[in-house]
Structures are given as C-alpha cells and as structure tokens.
Length: 90
Image 1: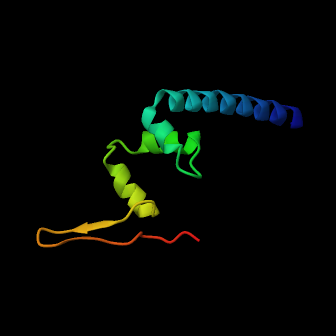
Image 2: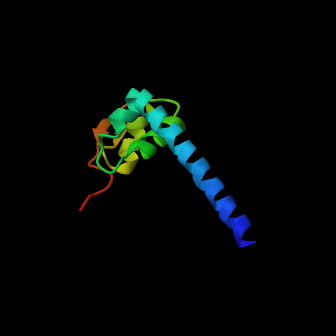
C-alpha cells in the first residue's frame, strides 16, 4: 500500500511541476502579468492568477483600491471625493 501511495505522490509532483511550468510560460507571455509582478509580494504565480481571474483590466483599479494599493474613489453625480487609502500598511 505504501508503494502505491509513493507512486501516486510522485505522479502528483510531476503534474504540479508541469502545471507550474505552464503558469510560468503564461506569465512570461503576458505583459500585464509581468507588470503586476513589480508589486512587492506579488510573484509570477499570483500575477498570472490575477490576470486569469479578472477578465476586465479596468477592474484592476477597483481591486487595487480594495487591497489598499491605491486610493479608493467614491463618486456620485453631485460630488466626487477621493478617500484615503482603504487600509494602512504597518
């Protein structure tokens, strides 16, 4: 039984390596993903996941405001105000 589990573990490791290589290749082919990697704490895997998850590039500003990287914007037809950063980084 342990031998079978060992084989299964090696097969899963191989699949993970193959998928990881595909993610890195997609990252290298995506300008947006490479730009996102410039953000501290965002590596190629996170950047590629963000590009894959958010279909509309304009949504990145809203996501960045939600994370606290850029100021949040609250606006209406009457008044347009800019708020402080949504989170504080210590």
